[in-house]
Length: 190
Image 1 (cartoon, rainbow, N blue to C red):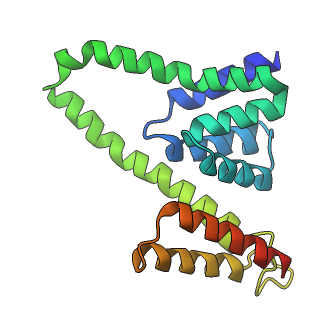
Image 2 (cartoon, rainbow, N blue to C red; image 1 turned 180 degrees about the horizontal axis):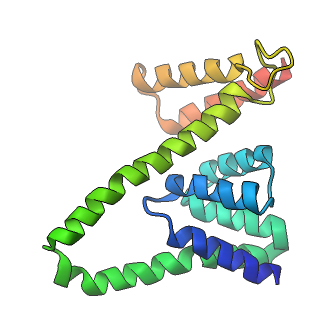
């Protein structure tokens, strides 16, 4: 029964997501953390980080990881297929009708309306990551004093350093990921 639940859950997420893996993150969080309580916030943040550093699309990696953590190999297969099935079917339907509707004003207007929603979903993912890595990270926080809000100086330091490395020194993303992970590990030890 859990296999069917995983398949349907990820099929629903895939069906209502437009814009790729980062646009799926708020839906993953809502369905897996808030509603389904498959994961807590920290586990979800770790899962997304792991899905980002492993090769392949973030949404597919996350579905596979969550499926495996919930029901082993069959769970990972069900979650992965659930995430892929709607996209596959919709892509096939779009390919069939693309030629017929490629000049349609209605279709152009619909796609123009979807773009801001995708930007909003990606912005929600940015807010989630900022909240978990900078404002309420599990590392030693500065200015918390018993409150829920805290500024994690380690997260801010890593953010500023990676921004500098990317914009000024043009360090490639693999180097930035490696240095960020190393710095995060070293700061965790402090």
